[in-house]
Length: 166
Image 1 (cartoon, rainbow, N blue to C red):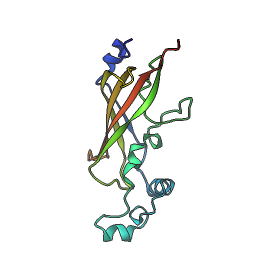
Image 2: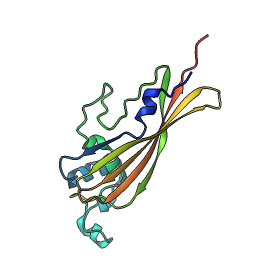
Image 3: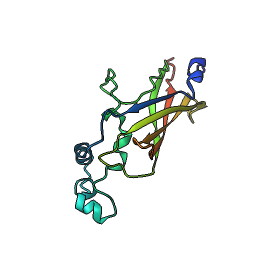
Image 4: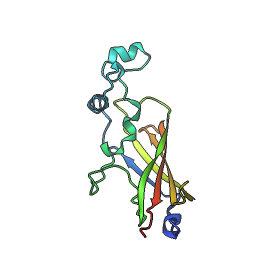
């Protein structure tokens, strides 16, 4: 059974962008740091941040990778409101394969973020147990209103064919 359809193959290279409607803001930085349990004063204390070479507070690194805060995408049936390629592979289960982040510059409260996602590749493989799987790779780049590259994110999602019942 081939999991890589012609329709999905035709989507490889597709890009979609989401631009925040406003600056990131200090409140978003503070709330995210609190939510992830990171009490680093770089995220809340201007004087401390300046002492460490920054112009003021900066955001925790992965904050901009959470597009649900600014993508203005309606929630899906599970409540998720961030980027999704909406790839449906009947007879499979979706597994997060991982992310590789490269941070280029700290994000500041006055940054207006644009996330651009590109569907980079889809490759058929087999699991060690002999099941068909499809490995889908995406690349997201995050820039600010000046075009400065802030972060890139290589994401892998794996669709594993369900074992047929006998």
